[in-house]
Length: 109
Length: 137
Image 1 (spheres, each protein chain N blue to C red):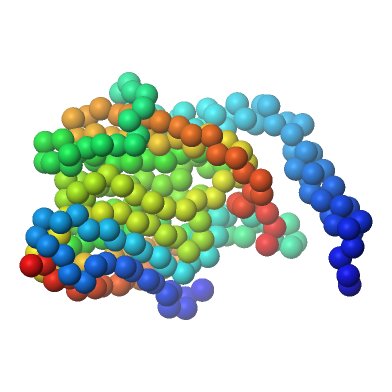
Image 2 (cartoon, rainbow over the protein chains, first blue to last red):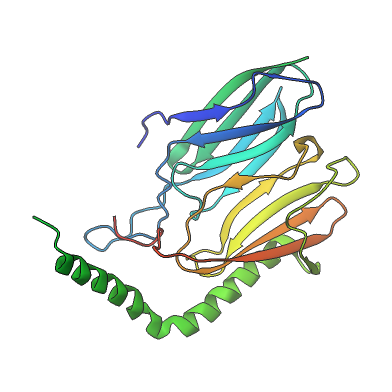
């Protein structure tokens, strides 16, 4: 359960100043809903990612709150405006102390 | 074991039966679920009137006029909330993709909160042939 989650993020490495860029993120996580029974009929406890935050050079540009209806291995695609060269960081937090973070550099010219 | 045509038909019949059985109490349950969804939407929008349409949002996404948040709800899932996205003028466009689980064929509702304080709502009927969130593991 505490195994390191594999996260994939896709950000264009280069962009023009002011350009709207597409960002895609995918993280491996079972997103157990808490509504499913196991083989003995007991409910499997909920284990989901609750929050996803994207920061651009430390400034929050996108945030998502997830509920159990979000699919396993949550995928989110969104856009942001390329303002300056720097780092785009995505952070996922969830049940059972789940925490994962991934960063990528972007060059804006 | 070779999966014969007969075996497949038996298997398929079992699925139909399993999905038909819960329908006995489905009417009361669906009213309950619809109420739960309405309550969840109210928790987001408060008493603000919800204006129909516009969820394919065309917004200039400027400081003065942008989409603040998009919330997604379902009618028949065990819990009405699906996801809430917070955006801002830096998003450039109000364009988000994600993937969700649906328990049954049902309405999926999106509510957008604009920077001027208005709320917009739109919905789409999604046909589900296999439920994903309640099956046994």
